[in-house]
Length: 276
Image (cartoon, rainbow, N blue to C red; front, top):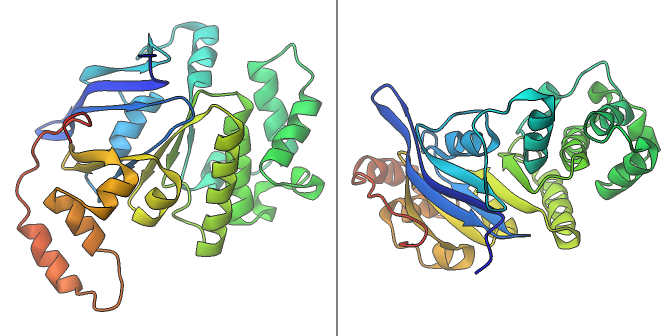
């Protein structure tokens, strides 16, 4: 079997007595899309930050295309090479964009940093077209753009470095429902035309259903269920997965019953994607 695009094994991270991530493992194939879902405090965001390199794991490792992703990069060239392996798109793109810098300049500066020998102009036009932004948006400052447009800029900037993996941490959570659909359709289209792999971090099962092939369910730092998205959502095996599905508002929804069921959940059992 060929090596997956991304492989995480035995990831653990503790903050004092709290085990935020506890023996988490998963794989992401070339061109695949994996969702990691769970409520607040489940460990999904910490897992993503370990993959990106914003957090250090106490144990375990992350491999990209078979190569161990170093916890620390030495020197400018290593840092840039590491950044080209995995890129992160945040929930709030405004905080990650320089308010004084136009969209085109953001992309030009990113390209010049990573590919100094290339003319950035053709690639800037290609990126803008890829994420559905026109010339007016290219000249605009972030404050003059809508939330959806800013998220498109953040995606374009991440794609500019030609990453193997794009981590999307609640990347559509702050957007209106109609804009969410546009961004998710955009991401699906990009995945069809490239070999990029997506790692979606979200609490929204609707997002998971739309854009992922496989899903991991995390609870209190552990993976409690994993498998093909359609299978897990149609026939959940773990009580916590069923609770997440029951928590989606719909006719007859009873939040009080959901809250009571949450308190009665048993401690999570360590489950790997292969075992789930």
